[in-house]
Image 1: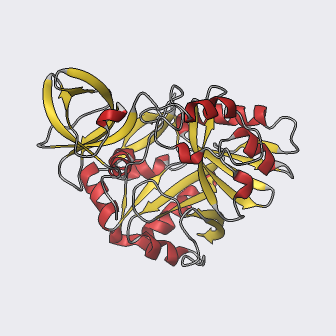
Image 2: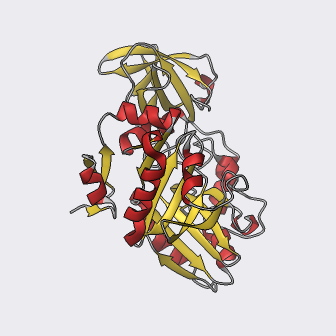
Length: 361
């Protein structure tokens, strides 16, 4: 049985259509996903992301434990800042991509994808053994609400006294909304300016209602369907599509997150050093097409009649008005301007390789 979000009753009252996502019952859309997508690009959208995992590490060796557990240099993150990083296995395969917030000198919060949060929490506990640190999985206790879009700062500014001018991209600050202590972050997954509010689950409805009241007609509830097309336009990877345990960060073109220069050993280091020296058999690219037939996940990419790759994510772009996709193809076919095709239900649809992202604000 799916776990309901702390905001399930709020979504039901709004007429949401629900979907099971990684064991959670989450709003897929409230009406038109295209309208929700457009609202985020032009004004602001309000998302419930409470299915994401939140794992906290506290203690004098929290930073050292994370340096060992993850591929990034987390001890170098300043208090109040955040970093995008990954957890890899001993063979260098990606177990999950993560955002890590440094809330205090000895206090970190690791945010994991919903489908991987239990694995990440278990691995962090195992990898933290021997360090003076406590690992607590707070995923069920923590609600996550995101306001995304060009008008989101004005809305957030009405409900809290945080200095938003000082809150940079990939930063966080404690504040209060609707009388409750929350962590306010500015990271985002849509290609727009946006904010995430981490609140205790019992307070989620109060926070949602405060944001809704402040946003008025500028703020629309938005479901997971629009979130997916927004992140695709922004060229952002999704675990299970662009990232899997069979791939290393280098395969996904994200080798920059692996910090070999840090002094600490880390899980997967030796394998990743080897993989960094070998050209990957395929590389992630953007594809644009014509017409209305959109490539979808797992559709074959062909060069003439020769299969050369696989689509990882694809959709008809609501913002751009034409099909877009991400796919893995051989490096020799990865240059922008390369002409290929995607087998869309038995018909070859022409596509062109382009540099990611498809959309920039």
